[in-house]
Length: 66
Image (cartoon, rainbow, N blue to C red; front, side):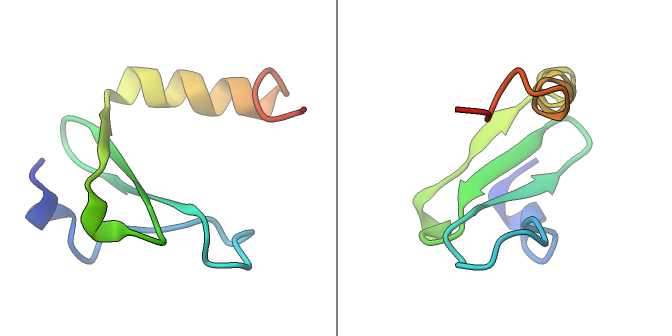
């Protein structure tokens, strides 16, 4: 998925109240993640398998509970 394909498909969490959050766009072969404060700065490309593992780890508290 090229950056141009993601235009209009970026979304951020409804919990993001400051605008300083990450945004994600899902493509057919990967998930892209970018900084909402600097969207022109590029994005990380993450496989669907790795993204689902990350989401599952967050959901059970393995990641994000400092």
